[in-house]
Amino acid sequence: MPDRSDLVVEVPAKVNLALCVGPRRADGYHELATLFQAVSLYDEVALSARDDGQIRLAMTGEGSETLACDQTNLAMRAAVLMRERAEAPPGLGADIRIDKHVPMAGGMAGGSADAAAVLVGCNALWGLGLSLDQLAALGAELGSDVSFLVYGGNALGTGRGEKLAPQPAGGQLEWVFATAPRGLSTPLVYRTFDDMAAQGRIRPNVELPDEALRDLCSGEAQRVAPWLRNDLQAAALELYPELATTLEAGRSAGALAAIVSGSGPTCAFLATDAAAADRLAEQLPGLSSEVRDVRRAHGPVPGPQARVDG
Ligand code: C5P
Image 1 (cartoon, rainbow, N blue to C red):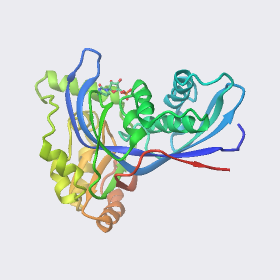
Image 2 (tube, protein in one colour):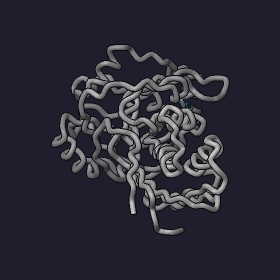
Image 3 (cartoon, rainbow, N blue to C red):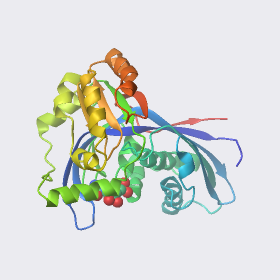
C-alpha cells in the first residue's frame, strides 16, 4: 500500500450518558432512548485515492491484528456502500489505513467510529458532496451507532439508536475510562438483557424524562452525575461480574458517578473537574485487577474532522 495520504480523518469514540433499553423488537433490535456524547479518544483514518477501482484496508494499533480487513469489516463496508450509493464513476477506489486507539469491543463504538470516518473521508476524497444528513442515513444502514458518529457532539438517539436529535453542549465533562482485559460481545449483552427481562430481573423501558435530558446536556458534572444510567449494565455485570469491583474502585476514589460504557466492558467515570479526573486516572490501575488501561478524555467533542495531509 502506498504511504501517500491525501486525507486524514480523526474520529472520536462515544459514551452513552443515559442508555434506556426497551423490549426486543420483531427485527431483533431493541428500542432505545439514549443520550450519546462524543469523547476525545480518537481513531485516525488515512485515505488516499486509487484509480483502479480497488478499495483496500489496513489497520494498525491496539488489537487491530485480531480484525479482518476484508468485506466483513464495517469500515470496508462503509467505503463500498458509499461508492454504490453515490453512483461514483467506475475506477474510483481508495487505500484506507486505520490507526486504532479507541478500545476494541469495549462499548465505545470504535468500529462504528471507523465506519463513520470512512463515510466522511470517502465523501471528501471522491468529491461526492453528500450532506452530513445523507452520510448519517448511510451510516444507519451499517450499524446503530454509526449515524451518531457522523455528527459527534451530544445527541438524543431513539429507534435502534439511529434516529438522532442533536442536543446542546452546555459545558465540558471530564471523563476517565478504564478498559478491561477482555471484551464483551454486544449481541451477547443484549441477549443477556432479554434473558434477565424474561426472568423479571429487569424491566425494559425507554423513558428518559425531559429534566434528565436537560441536566445531562447542561455539561455541569454535579447535575449530570445523578442521571447517568445504563440499562445494559446489569447484563454486562452478569457476564463480567468483576467489573463491579472496577466501578466501586472508581467511586471510592472520588468519581461522581461510575457506569459501564454502552455494552461494556469499558467503565466510564465522571469526575468533578480535570484535576480530579487526572488523580482518578492515576489511582485506578492500582485499585482493580480488572483495569487493563486507563484513558482520560473530555466531551462533548465534534464528529469526524478531515484534514488534507501529505
Ligand atoms: O447495529 P449494530 O450492528 O451496531 O448492533 C450490534 C448488535 O447489537 C445487534 O446485532 C443487536 O444484537 C444489538 N443491538 C440491539 N438493539 C439496538 C442496537 C444493537 O439489540 N438498538
